Length: 436
Ligand code: XLS
Ligand code: NI
Ligand code: NI
Image 1 (cartoon, rainbow, N blue to C red):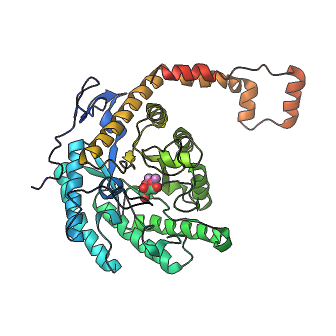
Image 2 (cartoon, protein in one colour):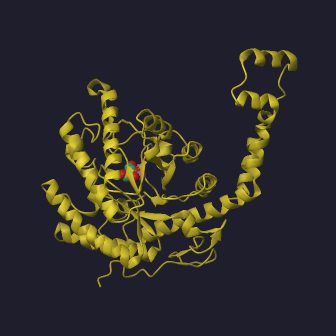
Image 3 (tube, helix red, strand yellow):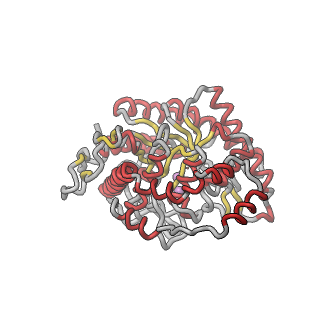
């Protein structure tokens, strides 16, 4: 059989002291942490679009990366070779999951019918490769944002004709996700947003987006697709204002349109920072509201205001992320999908491995650190102490909704000035450093 990464052997765990850059230092899939293996906790997925279709193109020039599976040949031959290369990569890296958009795996043809036929061919191959390797599909999704027909959005397009196109595409993408045993399905609103309110009926567009999602919910029942639906928030890029701008906004949308029971969120680190939040904030918001589903694990650049989709390497971030994810009970259908791409100058196949190995090690360290933090309860105790006043009869009365303004006033007249307590931020930051 043809191999696409001939110089790479299976990546193994060799421990922190290894000098082999093609080995894991921290990610030991079978090692148990809090009763589950690292592989079960972290549920790593490789994304198809960046890793196999991303060639390093940007606004100033075309791609710089040439791969042996996609530089020449017929489009369907390239699609098949790329699928083989992808499964070779998953297996050599040792991840259990992958994610894709419909248009990543098979090129679009002139008609929807022809495009769908192409998808069927490639999905049959993917299904066989999944069976041969044991690699599973974490989630599938639709690319309803690259083609020019979607320039003004998909579900939020001013034209119902374009809306119908998007819906047809989602219908097929859900079918193939089900066919591949996908554990989830993501809705990221590629161009669901606007550039100027001078030409946009925002209320109507959001009503249409909800109508599209309701159709998806109905179709899911109809075809008995058991995967979890996720919305992936992002505040800007490609449009100036994306409708699903952050977790709080998505939560409001889902409540307003009665979709809450059918959706969870897929939180992407770099999208959180674009929204002016930390990754931890978005995760915590989701855990607090019972809507954390899955994670697109990447990072942005401190100095750049766009979605640089870099591989996660910051141990602070991975530690705090895993701390919140574990507190939320860990992943069920979701996982950590590396929605990240190597830099434009990282042109060798080895770079794909270095990128993923580093990211997996960073999350393995995050997991181990977070487990220690949870065991010691250092931060839980500090928070508990800070809010202790609410456990008194007076605090409980307010929390249970049985208090009124007159009672508040009476309390102050009797007790006078409150005694203030330190927030202890610096101490807590020092304690956090002990775990990193
Ligand atoms: C783009 C999004 C995208 C989704 C899947 O910024 O992160 O990659 O994850 O459509
Ligand atoms: Ni993403
Ligand atoms: Ni992104």
